[in-house]
Length: 185
Image 1: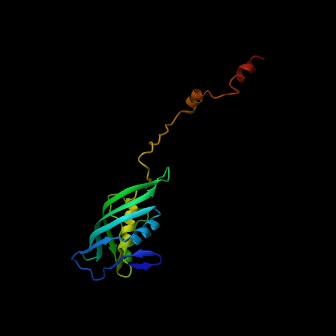
Image 2: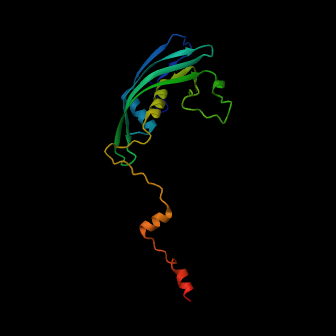
Image 3: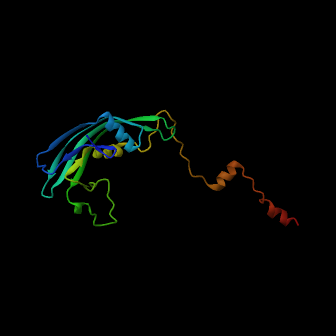
């Protein structure tokens, strides 16, 4: 574990990585879990494990990282702010590149669909920070709107016609009889 300005890192050198897979197995320490929870702005994180392998891809020299992440996260409920636990068990794939040109998107209006692979991440100083990659995968797996299970479901409002609402509520219309009053003169 290296200290990188308050955060934690697990760096792996991929400069001499060959076609044979390099396996990794991360069991985050309590300090690392606390730092990750703080970085993700969640209440807690524990039992973080990530297993997988890195392998060099073809002639372009890109590095493919595949693995499985397991963790227990605690977030604040969006309604009551009470703690909500979530078990994370996700498989993931991340592509890395040494060449900054691989990151350039030719069409600025291009939208990446769910079926398309993500663009590669840049390898800096021939090292990949596995803990940063784990944090990104946890962020993707977290429930965006955590909610306690015992809370009632929100009631969906239906679109009502304004005239119908006025009739149902008996809305007071002070000038409704004005035409009748004017015709009596």
